[in-house]
Length: 67
Image (tube, rainbow, N blue to C red; front, side):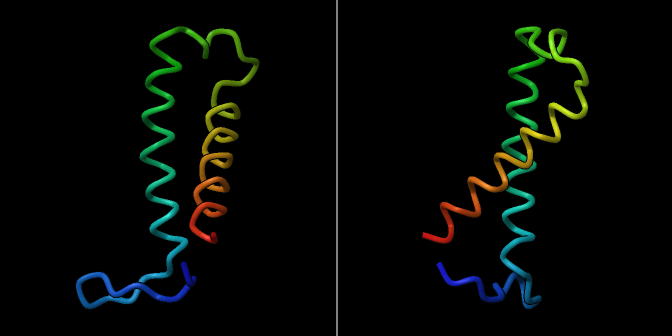
């Protein structure tokens, strides 16, 4: 995939913004699963944990898109 602007309903959008939204949706789903099984009770700082998971998902999506 080339990292060029994407035409979204007549508005040119940077591809990273679409990756940001996709990573956010995936991270919300993962957060729901982790919270359901009580894993967030065992981490030191839940917000920092969720942010780290979001960054991992975002970087993984970016690497997959760059292939």
